[in-house]
Every structure is written in C-alpha cells, then in structure tokens.
Length: 400
Image (cartoon, rainbow, N blue to C red):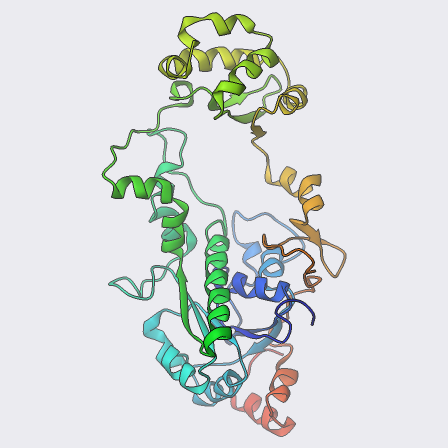
C-alpha cells in the first residue's frame, strides 16, 4: 500500500455505517484495514435489499463503506477467538468498534485490557449516545440518535404544522464517521509526540448536536424559538424556495442584499421594484416578505429552471436546484472534483470528502467476502496452518 497511512494497521470491528466509514477513510489514505465480523457477518451486508431501499444488482452500501478491506470472522464470545484478537492487537495501530460499553468485557475488547496489551493502540469507539452518562449503553441508529434526538428532525420540515421529516439511510452515520476519523487522526498526532495511544470516541448524538449547533446554541443561550412558517410566509423572501415555470424547485439564498438586490431586479427585468417603498431597504423587504415572495414566485414561474440557471449564475446570485439523488450522482462537477471517483473495477463510487494535495487515494477495490482473508491474516500474525485449521474446526473462525 502507498499513501499517508501506508503501514498503519487497522481492525474494523464495528458494524453498519458510522464506525466502518471511519476505517474506510483510513484505508483510502493507505492504511491496511481488516474487516472483523461476527459469525453470520455484519448485519449491514445486504441492507440494500431492505424494504424501501433503491433496487440494484450490487450491494452498494457494503461497497461504499467497506471497500478495500480484508475479511476475517471471529466469534468473540469464545475465549479462543478472543485470544486470536489479542495476539493481533499487539501489532495493531487502531481498533474501531461500535459495541456499547457494557458488552465489551464479554467480547474481550474492553479498552483498558487492550491498551494493556498494546499501549500504542488507538481504541476508537463509536456509540449512539456517548461513552458516559445514563444512556451510554443505549443502542441507536443515526435515524434515532443523530436525527430525532438532536432536534434536527423537529426543525427540518416545511413548516411547524407538517409532520417531522424522516431521515434517509446513513445521513447521520457518515458525518459521525468523519468525527471519529478526526478523533483518530488527532490521537495519531498525539502518539507521534508521546508514543502513547488511548481511547478516542464519537457519538451519533454528539455529531447530531454539532450538526444542529446553530440552533442548539441558541437554546443554550435562552433564545426564543419562532415556529417555522409556510414557505409563502417566509420571514426572508431573499432566502426561500421558488418554483420555476417547468415545475422544478430551487433555493434562492441572497445574503448580500446591498449588492444582490439590484442584480436580482436586473435579472428579473423589474427595475421598478427598486422604487417600491415596501422594498426600499433590507428592513422593509423583511417586513413585507410575504408580498415580495409572491412577486418573486410569479416572476420565476415565467421561465424554466434551465433558462434561469445561466442568468442567475452570470449575475453571481446564489441559488441551486432541488436536485434528485440520481441527478446528483450523474453530475459532472462531483467527478471534476473527485467527490465521485472511479473504482478499481471501473465503476463509480462516492469518495470520502477529505483531500490532501499531492496524495492519491487507494483505488477503491471491492469489499471483502465474509471471512475470505482469514488464512492470510492469521498467517501474518504467526499462526501455522494446523493452528488455523484447529481454530476453524473449533468454531472460533467463521466465513469461508
């Protein structure tokens, strides 16, 4: 392997999305990552076939979050399997887990025990609600801990009278994975200075609160919250959703009104609005926002989005279309930046959103089959073929 983290050894013992995605980013930058799964495999395998998910001939979420890893299955409920992991830990730089604290000792993965085996180990824990407190052992997904619990689910809806907005798969897991990755890299920097590893952690709830930090900080400071009004009654017509004549929606976001209000009037061909006392300055435009929103809505309905896009862009008026996921995946701009990049098999994948100039990422090889690399991995850690067979026959190993 080449890359910034070439030579770094990672065991991804986490399940589903958030923890494994942190290990995926390490692998993108050259780390060697072992995907450690329980017998039967990570329940994330095959989630693409769950009701309501997009249908495909590939296991696309498994590819995204486990590309380039090698596969090993250990039954960590068994002492002999725990002994295998403990031998591996002595030569490991980073362990990633999302096991809740109360279950770690029973699986032989309690932080203090593993750090005693390898003081340079970085033990990276991803939890739903945090390492401490009354809910440290409460299980959760991003839909519950990140989206519902953080206040985001309540706030992100069309208006106060609408039902709460449902999340989509992984929308909080990947930000939480980035948070855990950041903690890992921070600990790596500390280890370079001190030689010591240690426990790092991130949570879905903590990441959700950070994502909703603008509003949560307002609540902490005793702010008075105003129920979100319908779009037609938006308090700022210059930052609002509008529908073009073709039926497509787009979001207008004009924050520099001193420059952008005159430019908007020119684009709309409505110079007379500048003399309307209702819109004479920013304060008046805010006070008369519903009337202005109705006028802007009628003006934007006169052309298609394809017609509006070039003139709005030419005038440096900030906006973007409400884009479907299929459109986002097919667009040229993400390919130009590498946000969507080719895989080793010649397909396309979503890249991790971190880039370092001059550093190429690993070529996104396919994810591992269940336990497919067990023999090679154990041999690297000093196990003879007969020992590996004995572990498999005893039931400590699973997979192929």
